[in-house]
Length: 137
Image 1 (cartoon, rainbow, N blue to C red):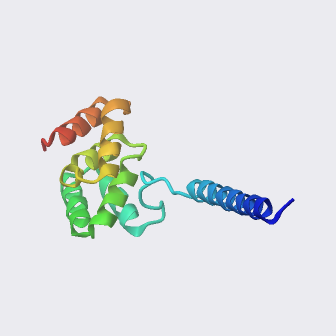
Image 2 (image 1 turned 120 degrees about the vertical axis):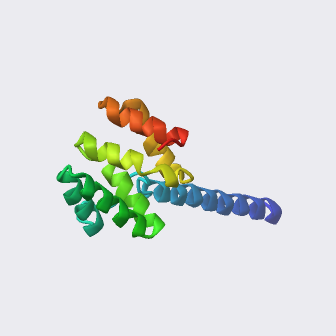
């Protein structure tokens, strides 16, 4: 074999190895992506406080929970509402859906609202999510 075919063959082997590693790296990094709809962690103090306030069922506590959320930075506000949207209690999910109205520009919020509007077992939650999607309070 002359020098030129060896150089070409060696270059092809190096190129194939680089492409294979790139595909492996891309696959592995794609496997480590977190679920963007997950929401705040269960031990998040803001989430615990919101759940505590909403558990009372009192209007004044719902107003306080809403004020607390609005005082948070936008990302924390979104994370807590996404977590509340997965709560087992329909009243908490309804609260979350109703309070996402100002955050509809975020794709995670839109996805959560669409899921609630289409799939939630409680008709009140579905209605609140649909109203929020439409921009109605």
